[in-house]
Length: 126
Image (cartoon, rainbow, N blue to C red; front, side):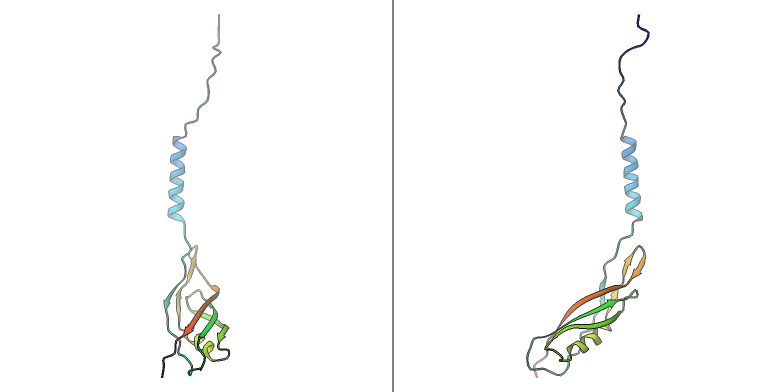
């Protein structure tokens, strides 16, 4: 006489509803996420070269900040070849006119400090 069955029932977990919730959460995060937009040059004015020097190449490495509005600021000359030739001043004057798409993170415009660019001056033969 057996009052209770001694067969053991194994518990099973149905994961189908859980997968549905995971996919819904994934879609929610994709739709609501904000991604950082990369800065991009919107307006580019080529620099005006100073009077011709004898020894090419004429290169100038400058560093500047792209502000929250996309304008450039705080231009400094990192190096110029030939040294003290005036190319750095011409490069900073040109960069002051450049416009960038500001960096956007979580819907807020942020400045980008330490942007470097190398300008090569190609002087026309006279």
